[in-house]
Image (tube, rainbow, N blue to C red; front, top):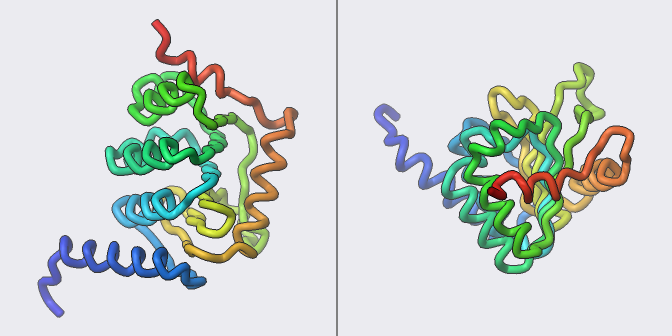
Amino acid sequence: MRGRNPATQMKNYITYISQLANSKSNVEFLNSSEEHALAVLVRIIQSSNNILRIFAGNLCSQVPSSAEYISALSDFIERGGQVKIMLNQYDDCNSKESNLFKRLAYYLELGKDIKVFSTEARPYLLSDPDKNEIHFTIGDDCAYRIETDIDKKNAKCNFNNPAAAANLIIFFDELTINTEVTDDITEHVKSLFVD
């Protein structure tokens, strides 16, 4: 099939992941490229009702800086959702330039349920003999996108696998209380944009 239209392919991809999310299917699928990452992450956020856990480098890259990602996260927060963010490459300079961090600071000022942590942790999948670092987003204890190659944006995803999400949730939640490797920087993020 020569000449497949990239816009049509992306539309078909979004339709496919929307169907998986809406049906709450326990189907693992692979995901790569920033465009596909954005589509899946936005859909996880939109499909979540209670809590999002995000483990990332600094959230200042193209995907979390996009208007679509920020809008989906804002809508989730406005619906009363809880957001927990863990960053292992937090950087004040990048954060001060980030529209996402400006939005988070705004919601923190309003008293919304958001926590931001900085950590030294470098998580990896136990099944990976090379122990490559992963980043992940988990929505409502069941939907996830686990980035297994953070440079190429390769990931495995599922909209309804509580068993697979459980280990990441345990790891994430334990990190939030381990002050040896994790700092709560919520108040710091809130103050980034105070004049």
